[in-house]
Image 1 (tube, rainbow, N blue to C red):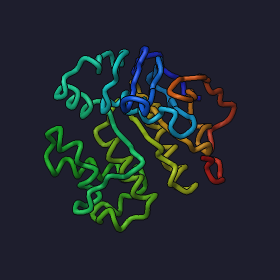
Image 2: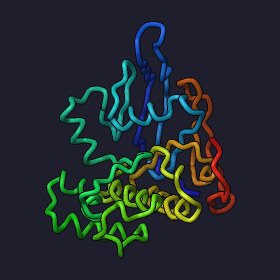
Image 3: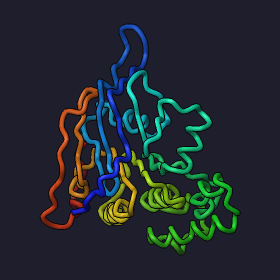
Image 4: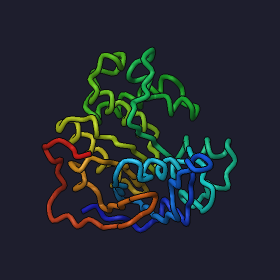
Length: 248
């Protein structure tokens, strides 16, 4: 089992969020309270439309909430200006989305190096570090290629490498394995396990994919904008990727 070191990374308190107006107004988040700790993989699960991705976006600082407070590494995201929030995200948070968002005119290594270039690294150093993290996702030989020459599973691993290249202490993932077969899924989940073991680092994953639940240290279930249950996982054996089609 992957033990947390007790350091609070994400602290969500009494958060509310609505979308729309009038009779079509949607109550997306209802008095949500949630914590994530360094050294753990936290999974947010629940039916489509229950608020998982909305909560993930709020934690990532890409979505403002109407009320409540969100602290990440002790910094109050709800009080930050737009510029401060952008700089904070660039340094502290790695994003992995359902869509790969790779730039087709750049090589695989150049795509991965983008977060480093934003932080001021030279092109040469960004490529060097990108190639190192590509080796970790078993794509080191493809560093010069265009992303559109890779399979969907390989493109997802490139997107994951891009999120990890600047060694962010918080990694946020939205359905990272939904489009992956068992082989690629195992590679990705083992990588997340290694990331979460790093001192001071946490991984938060939104997923429908019940094949990967055994990799979680804690699972928070959502329904209708609320956290309805939290459960700490006790691993009596190493986690494994279930070799069957994901539900939902």
